[in-house]
Image 1 (tube, rainbow over the protein chains, first blue to last red):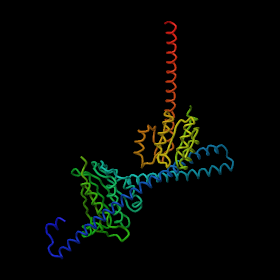
Image 2 (spheres, rainbow over the protein chains, first blue to last red):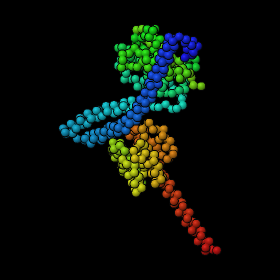
Image 3 (cartoon, chains in turn cyan, blue):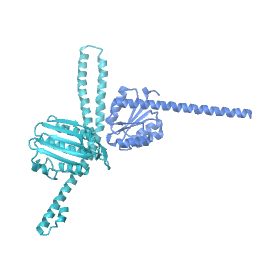
Image 4 (cartoon, one colour):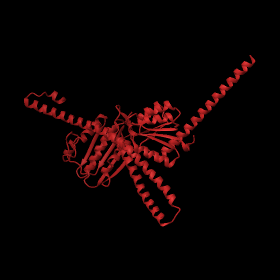
Length: 274
Length: 158
């Protein structure tokens, strides 16, 4: 906009070019707006679902605990006698006990998943809050766990970082997008390194993958809205544009280094909350 | 009242939660457990019966748990009241704990052992409050007696 004002277009061809430029800019903004609205709605729905799951989950978890308690009592009752029927009963009780132990573990796992989803989907307050980036990263990692497990080795190095003023859900969104991209960049097996450290009054989060990397041309375009290297249906090419927008709104910066067939490193710098 | 046969009122619009909770309590304790899917029905029960503790879900269609427990307080202020809540409304629940003076809140999904500790402590509180109330009324009646005697003495001598 600034530029077009300075060099006012004089010929119809120039005017048309400026108009097209403006239109593209507007479209980009529209897309970003739509994407962030979509995320907000999705967040609300997810929080609601997580909340709804807790009632049946509460009943299941409690009932498995009760089965365990009943089994203990039944075992005590059948312990006295050694007749063949009783031995069969004891064997069956043992089996039920083993299965129930699995149920207890499985429901514990669901509790953990729901908790991390709930924390992720929690709607941000109207005003920015003080945030611990390591806590946000840990919650985000719990969500991408299924995407990474068995295929990608995760290496964590959390050095203490100052708190950052901002919106936790948005920051989590940033980490999520970069982690998912890193996972997609790794075609078979590979590694993702997540590191936090402090540098010149900034909290820094570094996410490095050993994926396929990008050419310099690709690298220069990744923060543009609508730019994607994925086949249609996989992404809209808004992920990193949104990341950039969120980091900017938190007064931070993001840098990327990439080498084809070696991997990509994202570094996010967020100013420490004074 | 002994803990063994304490009267517990459970309210949740979800039958499955009531079944789980009451099965647990009947398995592990001698409490007298009364379950209700309707807060209004539960209120009628609280009004007409001896009750030692009330546990209620927060989000219910007919009447929310906070309103319900507020009404329980109006009827029987000495009875400890516990709210059962999902995480999403935890902050509201904590606010309400202060507004309506709740004894505790329990998060869904709950842990049975934690629940039992909260119940036992709640009943202990209730028992102590009851004893305190009894002592206060004993002191009051002793004081009234003394005043009567004093009046008698005055009448006799003046």
